[in-house]
Figure 1 (cartoon, one colour):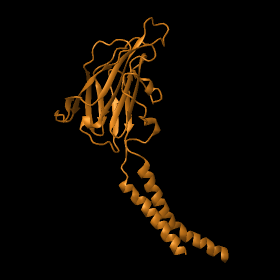
Figure 2 (tube, one colour; figure 1 turned 45 degrees about the horizontal axis):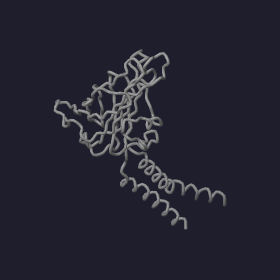
Figure 3 (cartoon, helix red, strand yellow; figure 1 turned 120 degrees about the horizontal axis):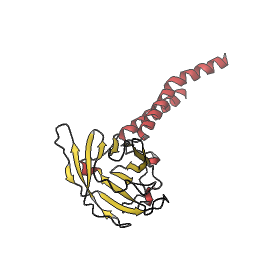
Figure 4 (cartoon, one colour; figure 1 turned 30 degrees about the horizontal axis):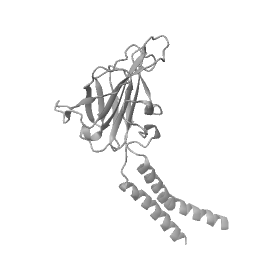
Length: 240
């Protein structure tokens, strides 16, 4: 009977461990990276429950920006609010200087097709994508065709001292295929714009699921091999 139990534990442990070889990791399973509910249309309410980072430059605590970077298995999502705290100062949309990495690949993004913004009239824009590499011969150099991106001038009265407050906001959804990438398994995605501030946003790729399965599988097998002899020794001592 003991041999049967031992064999079952070992087989269970090895089976659960082998499952990990067939599980494909997805871009971050962290709930904070949840992209559900995001619709790229120039209305930004669907970002209110997403993680937001304050972007500041040096000691300038007035021109604070808000940014968010998210990802799913096929797309990168980005949000920017130019003047969320005052609706004043440096509040017009920054169109260039966006530096993004996916794993070890580096990309420069520049907004194109942005005309004169009118309040509460979302404007669709595109991005010029350029891949940087050591030889300055980027594999990607094109105007995006599949990226969904909108900019809007949004009136705000958050700072009562500002007579006519507004802030420019941006949101985009960029397919990884636009970057010549078919998946982001276990890769880090970053976004920064030094013109806006000193901070860099990070999103980690890779699910913790396979790791948990591997650890639990090994634990079961190890428990069967190591603990069973100790249990037998304990039983013998109790009968002595």
